Amino acid sequence: MSFVGRKREIEILSQHYGSDNPTLMALYGRRRVGKSELIKHFIKNKQHLAFEGLEGESSKNQIAFFSRQLKQQIENPLLAKAQFQTWEEIFDFMTDHLKNQKKSEKIVIFFDEFPWMACSQTKLVSLVKFYWDRDWKRLNVMFILCGSVSSYMVRNVIRSNALYGRVNLQLKLEKLRPDECVFLFQKKRSKDEILKYLILLGGVPKYLEEIDLNISFTKNLQKLAFSKDSFFVTEFDKIFFSHFREGALYSRIAHLLATAPLELKSIAENLDIKSGGSLVTSLENMESAGFIRSYSPVLTTRKTNLKKYKLTDEYLRFYFKFLEPNKKSIQSLETNNIFSTKVETKWKPWLGIAFEHFCLENAYYIGKLLKISDQIESFGPIFERGTDGFQIDLAFLRSDKIISVCEIKYHDKPIGADVIADMELKIRKLKAPRGYGIEKILIAPHGVDKKTKNSGYFHQILTLEDLI
Image (cartoon, rainbow, N blue to C red; front, side, top):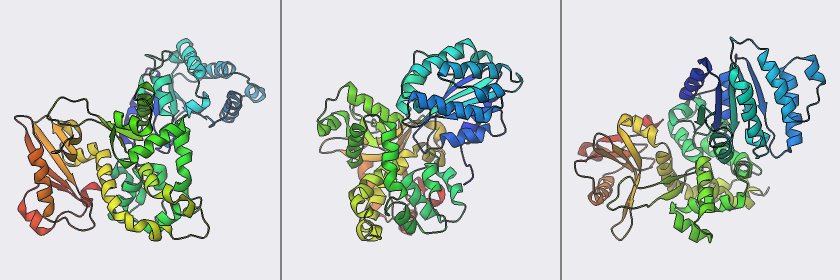
């Protein structure tokens, strides 16, 4: 599929590339989100050297693989015969090569999967610091360190003592927005199908590229998720355990948060572990990787440190709900129609919950659709505990002293007037700060029926036509 979206990221990269100053950049984000494709697209027709690390290999093998990639990109008789044994030998050669390049044309140096290249240790970071300080920052270079192990990239690159103050561009690559994803479908699938794919998989380019645009949503699910050794059955181990060393603990956390958003104390109690630094670090690593988010209530009636953690990765939510419980059946050659026999009856109720998560994950995009993005001060759920507790899935606190309260409903037909009573109950319990007004927003793919529309109750209604 063709490269789509990433306009903002390309603009940022172009600004730094066009600068007279050298750039040391850290790029990170979950696997499959398109980091490598972004840089490959950006460096096309630019002078560059690109290298990739090997997952799970020793430092010796990393050096050997790097050397082969170097020899493939630089024609040099001495290099062809060279047998590099250390990173220092490689970087010395690279430094001499860079010094001999035309100073008028900036060269991009791209280290893809840098944490693998470094074997998750810090020695290579220290060497990058040494060569950057001694040589590379005086050359016309744009140096990009990229990695999917977000915890390593944040802790050992962006926040490291070695590179402190040297990384002058850091970028966390997020999933594609819905309006960017739509171009991947090439007008071959309906907007209703596209929304289902995004609810299920999120804006992860690699996942969307696996879709066969010539067959239906149901057939794609059977092929990609409910068949023996299918892509989404095997994907969990590939992405999850490559992100985290202590994969078992992180998997338990993800499992738990798939059931409901929870506070730190509840997470610790359910996992029977202490709620101290180790658990907090694990949660921070998962949030940095883009699998979970932490939310505090946008508004509350009392001072509180209440914060909940929520599993927000669409694929993981789908995996834990439907794939993992049916894994034995899926891997059996005797079963070939698991979706219709074991999943479809539970599918529609789950889509409604998943759609709420989808809207929260794309809150800024929704704010843009509502034309309030410039006024947003904070966003998220509003929740109160106790007998009179309630929850609003998404609200925007705005600088123009308005609270945009969103009611999110997923149905395959227009919503009836019952939604007004549901929202009124929440609005009555919501205690807005003095001087604030409330705007009522409904997000429903197929809109509302005639009676509800004529009531004029909602200030804005976002439908499938708006979202996709």
